[in-house]
Length: 350
Ligand code: KDG
Image 1 (tube, helix red, strand yellow):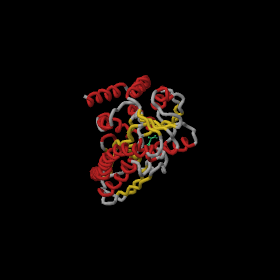
Image 2: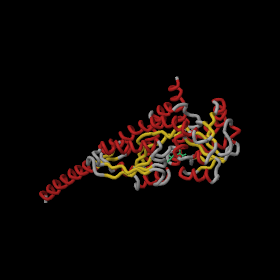
Image 3: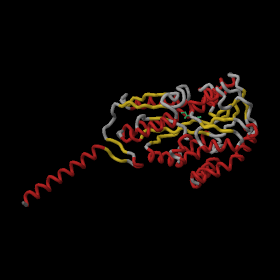
Image 4: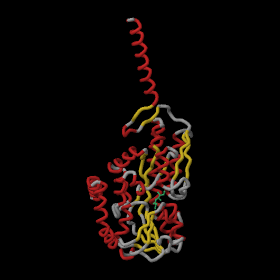
């Protein structure tokens, strides 16, 4: 009897050691609840889709990402790229990541406020004076904090890329003052801060997905829209718009997203390759975006669209008029976070 008990104990001992060994081989959990698997670099197809065109700085950034990943993985990690919303718009692709049917997308943060509401702080008009200020906040503790929130929503955020400073186009008249917004039917992103801000300026905002914008302008469902110059050029809005007013009223970041389901199935080596490539290609993309912002303006001048500068004085009046909207959403997004952001900006501007 005693002998059977000892044998049973020995077998149980071996079993638990075995199980421990197996679990160590299988997966391990890193901080923020993300997992990985210790099996080196495997042959994989990575579907990466964006809403913008291949010729846009975001499209070129994605091709740079593909080049780096395929080089660093010895060709094992193959990135299949999809442009021009062929896999759907930002929200549809983000949902595909959450369900694990797509691996990567790089949407604007604005449509994602339904997932991480704090991303809405980046939609505060006239928040950043320069792209470099945006870099400092996005690549700093605030940007990092918001990226980490994504893992609670079956998403992994690897980096911020640049969509850029947005300007208004329309088919009615140039925008020089707040009064020129009165009654203008303007397409906005699906973002409540943008909608309320344009309402405050007297416009009539219509939220819609990006891939529907050109048709809505062409059919005059809306009078105008607002986007960075690179997008106005790449999507040929000058073909269906008569006026471009350089309002530079808000800076929009892109966020580099990976499906958490996919991410957790990767080994630490594979995760590192994707993480490093998203940051390296991001630096390249931001630089390209800033060059394109200048180049696009010169090229848009040749298209016949009538371009006007908006004076700093008028932009200041617009900022004042919108302040109640910012106060309202500061409460919703968290005043500590908003105060932290404004004090960070003050430090940067010193
Ligand atoms: O996928 C494209 C969008 O992320 C981006 O272009 C969004 O700026 C945008 C807009 O106006 O929808």
